[in-house]
Every structure is written in C-alpha cells, then in structure tokens.
Length: 395
Image (cartoon, rainbow, N blue to C red; front, top):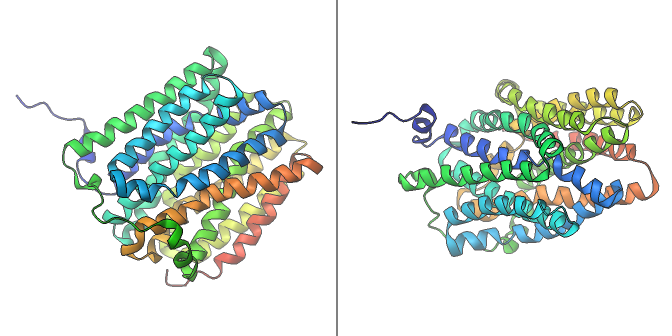
C-alpha cells in the first residue's frame, strides 16, 4: 500500500523556485528565533550600546575573513557538505549562547555569522544553477515571501520564550529548526534531487577574484546596492530594539517591532511585480529615497519610541522592496563560469556591512547618543539612492 506524501514534500520533489524558497524559510526560522535575543542578551551582558557595537564589530571582522574559506571548502568537501556545515553551526550557536557568558555570547555570534554565510552562498549557487535569469523577478520575491513567516514569528517568540522559560528554551527552538533544515536538505539529496547535486567544477580562489569582481562596473554597483541594504537591516535588527528598551518599552514590544518589519516580507512579491512593470532602476531608487528619509526622521523622533517605531516600519517596507529585487542586478550580471567565487565576493556585502557599520556606530556612540545611529543610517541610504541611477535601463 502506497502512503501519500504531504503536499509540501511533493513540492520539494520538483526543483525550482519553491524548493529553494522552502529551504530558505526553514533555515530562516532557526536564525530569526535568536535575532532579537542576541542583541538584547549582549546588552544585558555588556551594559551599554557602544559595547554591543564593538562586539558586532569583532564578529564582523572575523566573519568577513572566514567567509572567504567557503569556496575552498566547496572545492574540498563539495557543496552539499558546506550546506550541512552551515546548518550544524546554527546548532552550535544555540549551544554557545545558552552558556549566558561573554565567551559564549561572542562565540555564538561568530559561529552564527559563518553558518549563515555557508547557507547563503550555497543556496545562491543553487538558485543561479536552476532558475533562469528572466524568472529571478519571480523567484527572489517568492523566497522572501516564504521566509516572511519565520521573520514575523521568530523574533518575538524567541524573546517570549526567553522571558518565560529562560534562554535555553529559545536556543532549543532555534536548534530544532536547524536540525529540520539539515533533514530537509538531506531528504532532497537522498532522493537524488539534482537541485542539490554537488558542484563538479572547482572554483578558483575568491581572493584572486576580488580584482576581477572590482573590474566589472555592474558587479561593483550590485555590491554597493546590497551593502547599503544590508547596512540598514543591521541598524534595524540591532539598534531598533535597543532604542525601544532604552525608551522604557518592554523587550517583548521591541521584539514585535523587529517581527513586524520582517513580516513585511509578505509584500516582497508586490515589489517583484512592480519591478517587472516599471523596471529595477526606478523601484530601487525610490525605495532608497523613502528608506533614507524615514530612518532620518525616526532618529529625530527617538525621544518618542512608539512614534519612531511606526516610522521605522515605513522604512522597513522599503527595505523589504530592496530585499525582494536588490539581488537581481548581481544575478543578471555575473558570468556563469564565475558564479562560485563571485558569489562569495558579492556576499561580503553582508559581513562588510556588519563590519563597517559597527565600526562607524561604535565611533558615533563614543561622542553621541543612540539616535545618531539612525540619523547616519538615513543619510547613508539617501546616498545609496544616487547609485541606483546608474543601473542600466534594460536590467
């Protein structure tokens, strides 16, 4: 007697946009559960926003260097094992954080960054292998649409679990979804699904590819746009909760702010349709302009945390638009034979954003109060809008 499989498993049997979107959603829940817990726990351990910035700076430096090992790892142990390593490191993150020590905090943050890099790079390679470039306007928003539930539920759930049962419960929940990430991936592999077939062409060293990447104007532009987007999300995920807590707001509501902003990913598909109709350039340009203005105004309104939260949600709506379509310039510009190493170089926008933003904000917070972070981020986002004007019209 043949037992019918659940509908989502049948979907996963067909390589395509939905397969990768589901993979992204499951690993997102593992990361999202601790997304707000981590900065709040760091604030509780280190007692000041500047110290939190320094901790993120140290993690960003190490994570940036470590991410360049990933193409070498792909060459040595194949792509599927690098993905497996990434999921395993998310499990280790929970084990380190649950110690509630300074060493465990920084170690957990570092391991989480490298694990996320492993998952992000390998998943991006699968997307570029199996999604046609003309379909990216549909597949990328779908990925973020699937991930929206995780980022909507995860942050407040993690804070609630920590407050109700202790940090161990949030860490256990995160680790469970990391295990589920691993199980889903290997379910696909065991069924000989070509969507997770190992890479057969060894990638060149990414360090040797930095010059090649920098020599291509479209790749430079794609990186700059992604860097600005990632920098803003770093501000939202780390400093928005601190702004709320510092203003006397309960940490649970601070987590809800993070969740609400990420929950707007449900509208990512709308941004994809808008880009398909109007083109990438006006959509990315307009999103950066509103993002910058709203973030700057939120900094001015910091004395009223609830008002600032509403304004930051408007900014988050525009950031979601950049998430939905912001990677497409890279996907459409990179040559197929350079994908592994160029994807690694491109992904440095994430670690670079954490690194540079943390350094700048640590310096700012030495002389100014927390609202200065939002003022600086708003100005930077407005500056990024000028870059979007250089996107080719036909992209």
